[in-house]
Length: 293
Ligand code: NAD
Image (tube, rainbow, N blue to C red; front, side, top):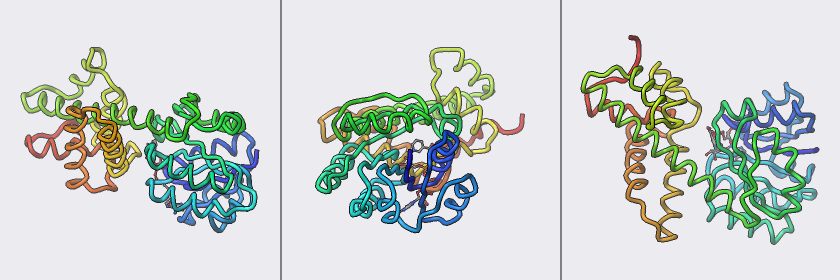
């Protein structure tokens, strides 16, 4: 299939690479020329702009950092001569998905929201959870291409349904990271070994993706290199809280977790890895979790 791919960052780069490996013909664009060059080496064609992509292919996939950037790129793409469907792999929230869908609908372009979960490792291995919502005939047209990213879950046919699913998932992930960080810092301050703590939590009922993947890989070794930024996690938490508030749903626990992420972004910076979330908690407690034994 001929595919345009815009946004070749931590997630977009490996996802676009997998499409090439699966035999799709890719034309790619990113505001960073080095990100384009890396994919051209793997066989993609380079485009000079979003508009050029929308003039060359029917199917445009995007993996972009924020709802505002997605709206700007969708607006640029909407004037294209060939584009028929715009597939948003980013996490943008249901409100923005609906606005983008409306803007595209007026130009007879279908919007499919298809946020993904499973991190950079999942994007490289093709083991992501791929949530999809949009018009059935357009979902059917892109299903085989999206399947190279991982397991597809069709959430519904209305714009934003897959985004809502993704925000619920990421809120669970964000809360588990915040709670596991506070729990492990508590244990370490009282004299426990964090490596033993994580082994026990992973064999017990406290287990989560935070304890199974993030602590062993990026926190205990102090590498803080999981591949998702604090800024993007804070964005997802803010989007979740805004949508929960709009729906009148209580946010007692998720609101508290949200405050932990706001502290992380103000103390560690938006560009820090999201596993750095533990460091302000360590600082207040006066302990360090992990490192050399
Ligand atoms: P990233 O910042 O690494 O990548 C975004 C890319 O978009 C960058 O290469 C950037 O140069 C490019 N870009 C920005 N503005 C642009 C524009 N106007 N035109 C063209 N290119 C532009 O972010 P990421 O970690 O790859 O995440 C992308 C999206 O996927 C986000 O919405 C994020 O929430 C979501 N996501 C990320 C992960 C993860 O683990 N990193 C997991 C699931 C979902």
